[in-house]
Image (cartoon, rainbow, N blue to C red; front, top):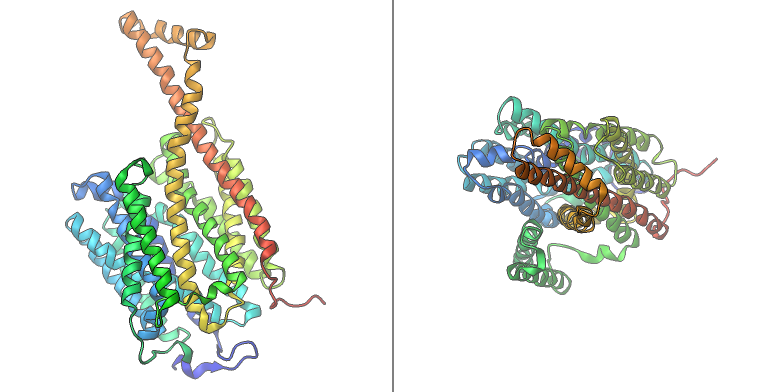
Length: 524
């Protein structure tokens, strides 16, 4: 039976499906494989670079091309939904993503891989915003917390499971299988979504839809150069490199031109009127910062475990699993109570837990046990889960259903940019903080420091059994300098974690600017 025939009227929304849960499973499956593909290739990147005889910098385009393509499609979701019909566009997106996944696994060189990753990102770009909009619209406003809790589970768990699954597949099979595994699940999701997805009349194909060619051009230039800026900025020493200044300038000019074109012209890609809604603006800002913290922590923690603690790629990914368990715990809590309590309180609790987890990570050392990683990871997972679902609800529930697809597209575009900013900033923070701590500590490697002298003498005496005395002394001094480098790097990691924690605490006052949900049951 077509979805249009099972729609009933509701006092809060004109159209609602009789059974909103029927499509949640297929939609969540599509979301999961798309979001997971953003991180699953990270651990396999060295293997792919070796297969294609590419350098590490060249292989980064395998990740970058995916992000650029999906970033371009995300804000265009509302336009393509009107042009093709939202349900049709969603199913087409899943199929394009699935076919591109198959092609990625069959790629024979770097050029082919980048082309197929662009196709994969373009196909998957519409999956998350449409899924978010559909689930929000499918439930009565007083029950959206339960639906979004399930949706949030996919958004949070997928990037955490990605590195673990990618490491296991790469070690036990080969890297092409991280793409081939998408094919059966993608086909299943497309078929089930075609049969069960909520498809109200206002989401059907519209006549006379015109493409905003100028806006689309500005969007492509903006995001393309912005991604290059974030990817290459740290290695090029940011604005000390002339070409980085040009890249950043072109990106900013294109962004300004894009938003001006969306304001001044008709039939545009985006409807920026949603920015008049205070909840949408504040809620989106909070989500952007949270996305920065999430992706930055996903990048920094495996680096810490591998470079400082000696973990393997699989073990470092496996260490993230408690975060997934914490997120699952939070999703269950949200499903049970999200529609019964003030959502702002849930977000405040979540941000507090995120802040505490960041501070816990900020006081680690190199003599820790696995439990010292697992506990803060679990706390961070609970915090992220308690934040994500309620803040999505709060940011979108004051908008009409007709605005949902457009608003979701804008929100996910900004969240993608937030994730890119967080990943780039954390790389810069590690580099610069390590340099600062090294500069502050290097004065201790002096003949005036009794501890330094004693250790050098001890190492020199031990090494003199195998090397000439002068060589042994130089080796002993080098060992002490290596210890200093390791210690300064450790402090850089700790500083970054502490900043993440404090940033989460700083977001809590913004919750006071949000309007309280009007769709929660009254206390008896």
